[in-house]
Image 1 (cartoon, rainbow, N blue to C red):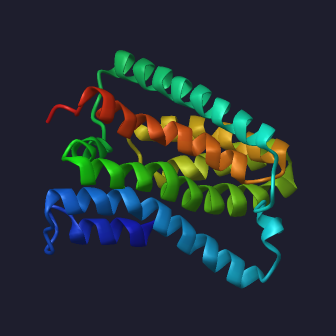
Image 2 (spheres, rainbow, N blue to C red):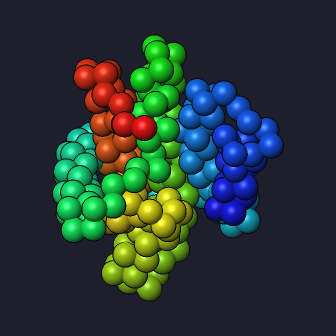
Image 3 (cartoon, helix red, strand yellow):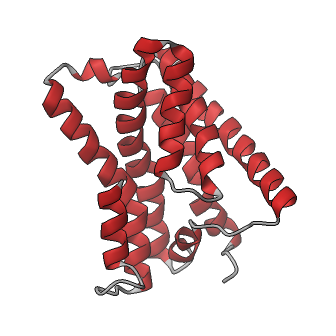
Length: 210
């Protein structure tokens, strides 16, 4: 996480290597997936075990459809949580606004944002946080495994408005993985949840106010 923050600060608008906003937005969109896969790769190399240990095993279409359905539930649930927080506190700063700006920048930005947010990031983050972290904590019981890994997942997203939303998504994804025995339905949860943003931009042209 510290490395991720350092790289994004270095390349971001306030860093010494100031990038074009579109390029920076795409970098941010891709970074979670790349970082997640890198973290998973380290865990796999250290353990030298079968991929099945991390829940990377075949599953059924039924579980994939259930995962997609729970992704919709996660999307609605996190939306309600964010609405409740903003209603109670008045705090509505969205640190992920760069995703909207990048997706709304044109066809290339939209397609790449969709691929990064709905494909790369779900695979990378689920392999790391559910495949590695949740499975490691499940030895202490389902409560610690699901809630503990979800808390770590949430903190990874920063102490901001996204933290409680990420926790909600993490709990649902972790429980789906625990029950299915495979990380792929959790990837479906995450993918459907993340797909909402680029689709919103595609069909409405929406963007966050500056």
